Image 1 (cartoon, rainbow, N blue to C red):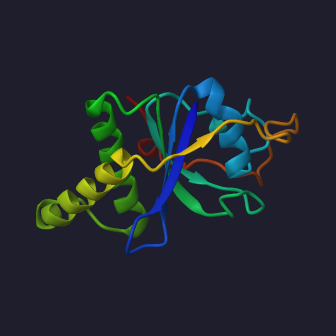
Image 2 (tube, rainbow, N blue to C red; image 1 turned 90 degrees about the vertical axis):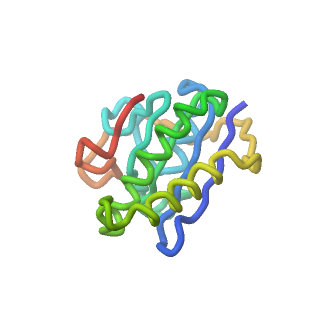
Length: 157
């Protein structure tokens, strides 16, 4: 069963989406939610245990927002959860223009704790039916949403 939730990264307008499950099961929902056109497009692929900044399509359920997305196989390996939460903290800091340095350690620690605690809360939506229009065969184009161009924003553990 796929699990999903989203939460705001206050005090900003950015959201963090968490997907839990197998890539093969999540892909149709992921494509539909972010308004991606073709699952074969390289910049649309998701991997196990990954964090990325996503630009959602304007007509998508994510409403054209720039979002941070974490995909996990499960919550059982806390090391991986912490690892991806730290990636999300770095991505969030990049989006809001905050540098992670010695003078910001308390903020870094508080935001890292907040992100980890939100990931671990058992308030996920369980998803079961594949959307009818997910992953159609249209071609990728320059207008379609994509990941952040910076290679440091998409990592696999």
